[in-house]
Length: 116
Image (tube, rainbow, N blue to C red; front, side, top):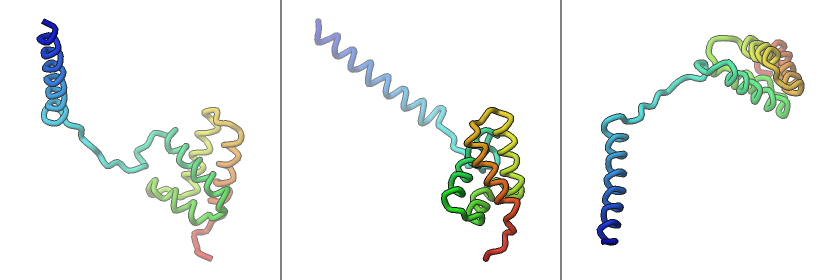
């Protein structure tokens, strides 16, 4: 009697795994999309710009920071960093993050884009 119960449990387990894999692979497979970073929500864009600002604070290379911000499309690096600063101020980011973003905004406004 007990062996029959275990056989039923094992068969049900195998059937469940098989049905789950069949559903996931054949009936409703995952669809991947290659989206560009400019489609991110404003909070994620601001986080990315903040990470760029923190990297700029360490490297002090405005050209590198501008290249990192260029993934957001046709806007200038100054406009991208200014938008992130405004979002950070209006959504209660810590003062330390706002100071780092302000430093990046100042650097991007002064950066001419001409290699030195």
